[in-house]
Image (cartoon, rainbow, N blue to C red):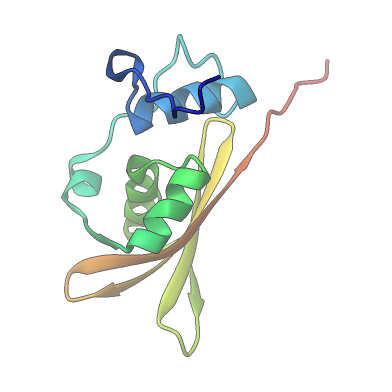
Amino acid sequence: MTGEEKKPDPAKQISRREFAKGSMAVIGAYSSFSQEAPPPLSAAAKALKLDISEEVNSLLEERHILEEDVRRVIEHAEKTGLKLYQPGTNRFLSKLRIFEGLFYVEYSSHEGAYQVHAAYVHRFKLERED
């Protein structure tokens, strides 16, 4: 090697979403991913105003969590009321299962926007025993 840094080929670059889809398909987050797409985002989820800091955005990327999934979790929590309240912090924790992934989002609401503080995902595959 000449010591020169090899630059990525722009023609081979993929979007964050494509990367996350591929990663989730490999580890089984979405069952039969090539045959089954994630559920479409509802109009209410699309309309949510999210406040995501650079630090949290980096965390989402590192954990292969899409903004769409964060939107799904918050929209579900606000629609159903299925969320935990953390006293003294005005933060909520909610979860939503999307295929074989259980997504958790810690967030707070202020002035019509939702500030995302953290997000986690637990990916697993349940096998049926006969």
